[in-house]
Image (tube, rainbow, N blue to C red):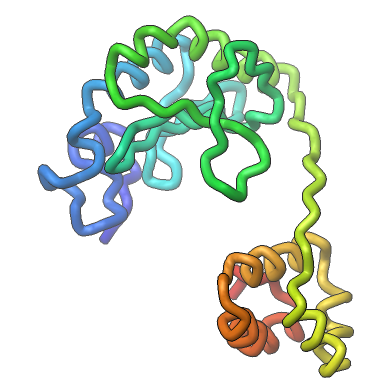
Length: 208
């Protein structure tokens, strides 16, 4: 299944990431009026429209500003580099349980988009100004606990321990995140065994 590369295709058929693409069952279909309302708003702000990650992406001064998306339960606008935003209206939500920075506004009606239009415009303007100034979002320090199973594996396997501690902090975090996602000890142990060769090769959890 080929993902879309033209934003027009998203509004006509969906993202192309699943078998529901170009069908009445696509997640974009129930929310198309709301998605189009967000699209008009972003375009009216002078943002350049493109497609990234198979979704409409709006850019300014060479920086990604916002992304539109749809799920079964709602549709949304996601503000990129949201760490720079001052959420004066208190409307931003975290995109997921592991997210550190609130960055999305979710909707279920066009009326909700219309009611929040001044706020959305103000937030887009903030990010556009930051893009023009080249401002970068602050780094967010995130502590991820090391599961007991990994501690035991490193204690029992000096080669693995040396390789793990030689990884960059980001690569280490990728493994900690993947392991902490598992609910059961047996799953964590199996993942450590699966990751061993990759760790020794100096790669992160998602690297190939």
